Length: 621
Image (tube, rainbow, N blue to C red; front, side, top):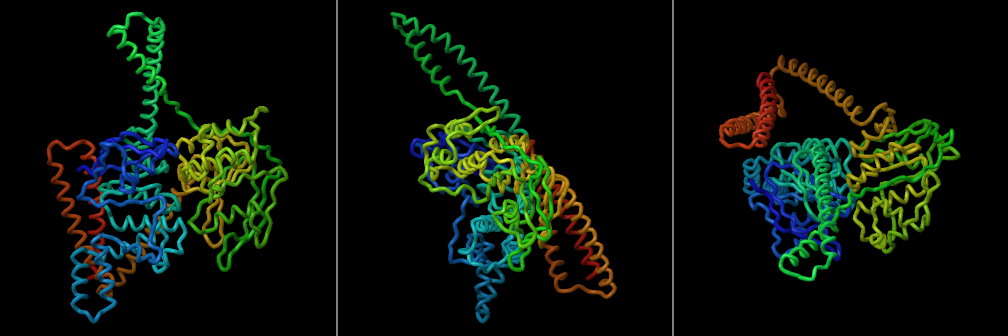
């Protein structure tokens, strides 16, 4: 089923052309990522598709299937400030959500028996009882717990999580997501990854999370030089096919150059007789000249700024503690940093990771203990808040305010404009005001200002937000060769796995554990512990059921669960039958067969679990 069709869509802002004559079709079940360099127009393209901005072009069309519901997650969601969190979630066109709102209103006036009865019947018809539980589950998963908190008091990150929760709760058939992992902690990201992996879900998202691209996506779109290139498969396939595309394009350009030289020799002879053939050759030459002049340069950020040498003492923390009121951030932490360490920091949002970094840089004082930096230690602190500059300041002024020349290795120097060019700011773009930069471009400029300080101890708090994949690759290579220490706080799992040697794990209540390994190592051990805990809990539940069986009967919650299971088992059996019958359809595409097989396997597994639980409760009953 066709969900989306774009025809000849263009968009420009002033003289800057973002994309031109883009045509694209997306079908049900496709899991699509859009990648591009910062400032290429990814967010703008999503907004055009979602109907937030009009397309440009005389024949431009954006066609969305009218029979499906669209969900759109903006980078900066907007809510009615007078709502509470629960009111914001219930402000939806979803029939199930509307039924819940009607039921909530009816329960405020229980004397109106007719309205209460209608509301209950509507809840039954739409199976909204389970949906209400789903609302609370999703909000809790995304750490939105105080349902009566006014939206006006939420931070930008909290609003982003609320918007994501609202979208998931509404269960649209087609989801458009703009950087959905920003402001999520690692547990939330893994939960979102699992949600997006559902076989029947269709989405288009902008993301730089390479594990999402590798594990979830089956089509990657690249916006490059105003055009869309399609790569079927995941991130590995994308890298391979993109490299092949570049080789082919360069080979074609080489052929064009050789042909151009031959044509140039002919044109320079300036033949006297300009017959039809001669005129045609001149026209062909001009077309070829234009083609060769449009040569693409696959530029990337160049980071080769020299770092100062570390001394013997680098940074020491001696039994430091910090709390705010009753909340412990750090309790009795001691550590001596060694040369060339790469440390990752992980923990849930709000646990105090940023405060810990500020303690190490002495921007925050500990309540007890002390932090002792080495005499030669120079910090480069890339904070989560990003660059704080006046919007009317030009890019070149930002850099020249720090230094006119920047020292490189082997005694070389770079001027400020040359350095900006290495960070992909052309001479023309260097004259642009900071307010006109995209989020990723501002981040790239901020990173440059940090590295210009010539640090030998880098502290990076969420450095990957809004950076494009190419810039991330270059930054990773730089950090792996950086002749100093690095501390990273990041929710980018791929970035952490590639860079860090060990982790500081914030476990809450001021406790920080040193783990020898990367993030994937930690998660593998953690998941095994979780499985063991579930096995222990199941054993205890079984023991409790056996005792209850001796006493006989079910409690109220178990009776409700038994009824729910009966309905769910019937639905799963119907879906299983539908899928098995669908395999008899002739002419099924291989990818469709694979998708159906995955869904059938998932349905069978879930059906088995539900039946086992039903049997346990039935025995007790």
